[in-house]
Length: 263
Ligand SMILES: [Fe+2]
Ligand SMILES: [Fe+2]
Image 1 (cartoon, rainbow, N blue to C red):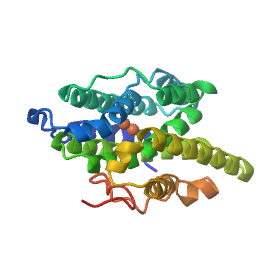
Image 2 (image 1 turned 60 degrees about the vertical axis):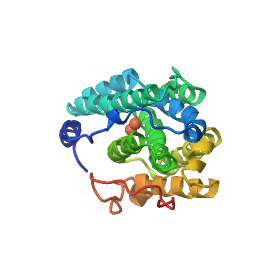
Image 3 (image 1 turned 90 degrees about the horizontal axis):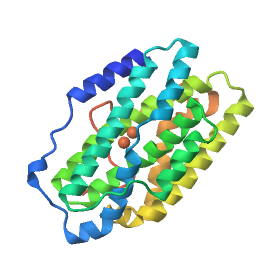
């Protein structure tokens, strides 16, 4: 399991090796694409925008309790990546004359959930739920558009999210280490329940964009659960140890939605 200093170094290195986004291409969305994805994209953009104030505070408390000093800078850099996603998506929306929304219903629910009971574990457990779903969503979005800019943006976001999910899953494994069987089973039950709810809500509000990306409701269901299993892996779910990451191909490339289209 990489340590916090390794994660900090990863985030610093990632910031130096971002993909070039061809902004000069200008507005590219067709009217059909705009009709199918604009609202959805606005909502995801709002979801990516967060100052991460609470998360940072929980990370600081955790760091003081455990002596894991490097976790705070790693979390700061992680929040910075999410803010970059929000900035880039906002730029893309502005380029295509689509107004931003400050917040959405699902965004408010998610923020409320993260702070409902306080603490790092809840915050990270809710965050990872959104990030695992985001991996399936952005991969579908990439197939829903011919826009070179948006496809490249999805590429960058997917690369980042792959590592975010790993970062959060590893932190959850640390936080849940030593929990007894009953506690572990209950924790994973709640995690699955939250995931199921999120998956259904995201399908309901974003189905036009997801369908345009080639995923039926069944594909969405299968892809989401496959990503969930990959994120949490059997060892974490069943024994409280680190998740199995044998499926991953490393930092370089996201493989697209499991069971998704291949255009
Ligand atoms: Fe993100
Ligand atoms: Fe993320």
